[in-house]
Each structure stands twice: as structure tokens, then as C-alpha cells.
Length: 139
Length: 387
Ligand SMILES: [Zn+2]
Image (cartoon, rainbow over all chains, first blue to last red; front, side):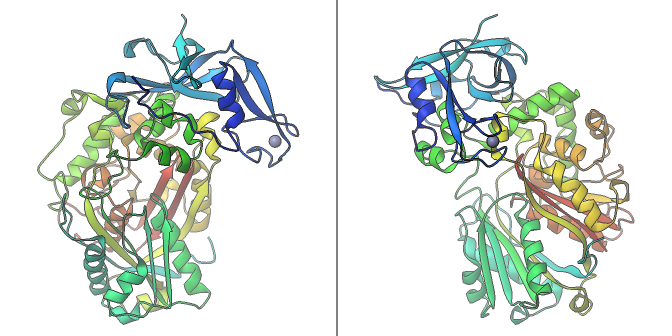
């Protein structure tokens, strides 16, 4: 069966992030002038306005802690009918404190989710050539 | 105080009928609201030389409204926007009057918010959402497509940090529903809510139940702004603008970095400075209430209770008519109607005029009020009014 949910659309600003995701890696945009990470990526740094931006690869071993979350009991978009309750979490990365990545926590009961839980990034292969980063509770 | 303090006034307010299915276009609703506001002010349509509105591609234009009022305006403006647009356009109207370009401006919001294009209703094209929302590719593929989910991330974290509980959210809802029982035009008139009812309602999107979401309605609202001098010749007691901070932003990237700050935190000091008053001077409030939690977060931002004590502030009944800060006294967007904030502004104007007289709807002796707008954690505004 084909994938029913929205597939991340690549554009001039986010393509390096999603290309890396397709290879099961996390890449973040970083400002060469103020050294802050810039997420979501864009043509200019949200902290200083510099356009001197590069990409840093964090590889495939990414962990973090649940910083906040919501649990959706109704699908707000087509394709999510079988994912209810849907956990959407914002996760603080262990090695980049000022960037938090929003994704679903998969393979978990809604009642397991708590702020502070340790999660690791996993990649769902959603089509032949696309992959979607997700979170999974590891403790 | 600022240069504009007490020099401009809201002189007319009006609304169309409110329903779940108006059966007419937004232009018809806008015309009804505009005529009601013009009549309320004791003006004629030809006295209005500027028309402004905000919309989400779901309304008519200012030009269309003026045409159907038989008026040739000197200025029209339609902006894309939701929460805080009322305050923004009032500020713009004042600026244009101050510059000498205009005399009197009518601002409206008209929408078939229930029968037409629904904010919370879904049915949107996922790819369109990804392309049009900042950082869309980082939320839409995860099913996060509604403000309830986006603001919910702020709410869960804020509740965790400050000790706000589900019951505290419930007290916001219960307080506003109580006002709706006194307002025959409110959607939830005749549908009271107790805290037990609230706590027995399942989550729609944790931490929110259906009661924590604003409702959706078909209606139009209109407001007329002019100079204090012209206001003295109008029919109603003028409600003067003391101060504004009409729209401030916080970088959108904070969804992925900083949940601790919201744009309202920047608005608050500016609006108090502009008006020359403090939180304790405010007698009545219109706090943007697209979600119950948004009220709690703004009560903190605008200094009505210290961080960590906002939950107790609402649980003690302070938003009720006999509380320290009677708020959204027609029922708010949680229980009266929904026009992205303008219905709450109409109500605070009526309160400051003492229009409800000796009835149980009138906040006793209210002289100064605050109206806040919230488009999101990243965009907000406010104004302070007096009678
Ligand atoms: Zn920078």
C-alpha cells in the first residue's frame, strides 16, 4: 500500500536536512558567524541575520529528552486515521541544546509519554527513496 | 503616556446575526455589521472615509463593503491575518487619521467561520500547508496541522514548568461559559459548564478538551474609530484609546528552540508604557481566547498574576464578574462567538460605556480596560481603553 501521509517537501532551504534524513542521518544548519544552529533552516540566521550558513552532520546516532508533547485524539490531516492517539513531541537534543526537533513518538502508548523521557531518533522508510525521522522511547 | 493617548476613540460597534449557517455571503454579514456600527455611532455611511478588514481568504473586501454602503472611500485595506489584527488595524487607522489623510475609519471582520472555511475543520491540502506555513515540512508530515496542536506544545511545557493543571484550564472555560449564560446571543447560552463536567470531558488534543478550543461561528463585527474631537459629536459615550502595542513578533523558529517566551511578553511593557497605567489599574479585560491556555499565558505576560500563580488566580474566580479582573464578559471566543478577537473588543467597548446599566451583565464602575490579541506564540498585540 502506498504511503498515505504527507511526505516532506524539499525546497531550496531545507533540502540538505531532508536529503540527510533519506540517508538516516541528521544534518542541521549552522551559522558560521555566531555559531548558533538555525532550525528550521532558511536563507538567513534567525539569531544574527548572517547568510554565512553551513550544514553540520550529526550522523545516525541521535538522542534527546522529551521537552514537550501533545497527544492528538483526532486526525487533523488525511492519512493519520490509524495513528490515533498520535503523539507529537518536541525533543531537546543531547548535544545541541538550542535546537529541538518535532516528530512523532512511535511504538509507544500515550500514557508512557512524559517530559524528560529519553528518546532516540529512528528513521521510517516511507517510500523507496524517502525516510522520515521519528522518536522512540529508549528507557 | 504616548502621543496618541486619549486623542482617538472607538465611537461605534456593531455585529451581524451570529449563526452556524448564515445562508448568506460574508459581504451580507459585513453590511449588517457595518450598518449596525454606523447607527450605533449616530453617523451616516458617507462619514466613513476609510475601510479596513482582516481575513484568511474567507471574506469580502473593504472596497466591496464600501460600494454596497453607497460610499466612495478614500482608503481601503484588507490584510491577511487572524488574532491581534483588530488592534493592528485600529493602530493603522489612528496613524492615517493622525497624518491627516482620513477622518473616520470602519474596521470589520466578516466570516462564515462555521458553514464556510473552518479554521479547525481540516480538509486542507497537505502540500499547500507545508509550503505556506513556516517550517511546514517539519510539522505537517507529523500530523501537526492545527493551532491546537502547535499551541499545545507550548501549553504542555508551560504547565509542567509552572504547575498549571487541567483543572486550571477548566476554570478559564467555566468562568467564560458563566458569562455566556447571561448573554442570549452567545452560542453556548443555555449550555452551562461546571468544573466536574469539564474534568469528565475527554481530550481532543492533550492537554486540550473540546471546551478548551474556541468555537466557530458565522458572523461579522465592525468598529468605528475617529478623533476624540469628532467622538464628542457621536451618539455614544466615546471609549478612548489610552495606549497600544499593536503587533509584535517573536522569531518563528522558537517553535524549535524556545517555548519559554511568547510575543505577548514583549507587548505587555510597551502597552502599559503607552497608556501610562499598570496592571492593577485595569478594571475589565478582553483576553484573546482561541484556547483556554492562551488566556493563562497572557495573564502571566500582562502581569495580572505572577508566573506560577496564574492557575490559582483563575481558580479563585478572578475572571468572573465579581473577581479582580472580569474577563471576556460576553463569553469570549470559547463560548460567545468567534471573529478572531473582534467580538471581545465589541464587548469591552460596551462595558466601558456602561451600556448594560443596572443589569447583571455590567461590570460595576469599570473605567479602564485592556484588550489583547494573539495570532500565536510568535505574534501578539494589545490596546488599553478608557471611558
Ligand atoms: Zn548567526
